[in-house]
Structure formats: structure tokens, C-alpha cells
Length: 241
Image 1 (tube, helix red, strand yellow):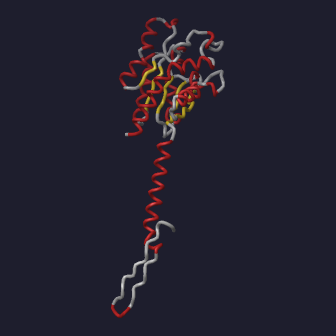
Image 2 (image 1 turned 45 degrees about the horizontal axis):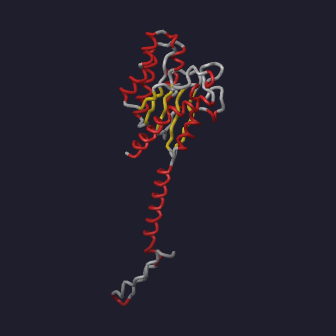
Image 3 (image 1 turned 180 degrees about the vertical axis):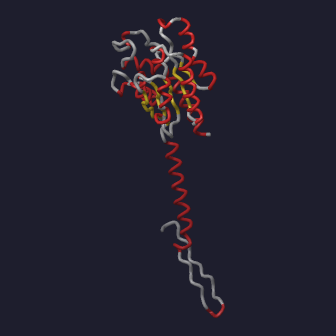
């Protein structure tokens, strides 16, 4: 075993003229070899862990799932591409379910956000608003989602939603306050309006007027990207603690 051999040593002549047997090189080097192997394995594991991509889960409704467009054009895939273009080693997983309310999202939170997740983008609330659900119910569900994620050590970005003008002023005011209030109370990142820059633009939405086209998704990604970069930084800092 080159590099690890140790010269045999005779212990001398004992009483009665009996000579102790020499110790073979491989006997003396065994502990050294096993120690080096263990050190190598630890180093390899640590290097692999450090090199693992940051795992982000996009947790939302049809706006996340990519309703009506290819999955490769959906928000999670396009955000991952944009972050990687910035030199950030990330994996963004699509955990969007079309038609889902905040309460329904809460019900599936644990199995939709698996162990090993570093960060979550929470994008829920649009369906609550479209159905005219009580904003207090939406607030309660979103608050619990954020709190449960934070208790797991997961960094959170809350993607805000705004009520449509036809919902009436009292409803709009109650609904629109949900997202900034939760972000402030829980100390998480906030992107105020997920549909910023595309809401009401026919060219950037499908014929239903509610879901973005691939071009609309790219506009969303461009808007949220600086906040998503902050999310990555925060998640890396948390992982390093």
C-alpha cells in the first residue's frame, strides 16, 4: 500500500533469548488507512451537501400550476431558469393545484412541501377572492401556512393578491390588507401583487382573462425576480446557521 507502509520494528530479545516477532507494515498502517477513508467520506459528503441546489417549492393555485400552458412555461420552471441565469444554483418545484383556496392549500401543506425544502413561495388567495370568501378565513389559513413553514425552518416569500374592482370597496380593503399584514407580522418576504404588470392585459392573458400566457408568466417572473433572489440569500443564510 504505497505511502502508508511503516518500517517493521523489532522489540528486541526478551528473557530466555526469545525474540519478539516484528510487526508487519500493514498492521501498523491499518488505523491510519481507516482514518483517512473516514475523513475522505466525511469530506465527500460535506462537499456534496454544499453543492446541492437550493430547493424551492412554489406552492399555489392555477397561477403557479400553469393552467392552460405547457408545464415548461409555467411560473416555477421559468423562475428556476431566471434564477439560474443569475448564477444561482436552485431547483424550483411546482406544487400548484388549480382552483385551490388558501384553506385547501393549508390542508395539503405537509405533503406538498416535503422534508429538505429550503424555501417556499406561497401564492394563494386568488380563488378565495373570486368566490367572495370571507377575508378573515383567507387570512387565518395563510397565516397558519406561513407559521407552519417557519417552524420547520423554511424561508418564505408571500406572493400577494389584490381583489378585483367589482368586489366592492369594503371587501377590497379587507382582502388587500391580508398579505402585507401577514408578511409584517411573521417577518417574511412579500411580493405585493403576483399579477403585477399583467392583470387586465389581454395580450398577456389567456382568453379567460384570468390566467397568464407564457409571455405573461415571463412578465411575472421579471417582476418577482429581485425578491426571489432575496429569498435565495435568506435561505442560504438559514442553511448555514
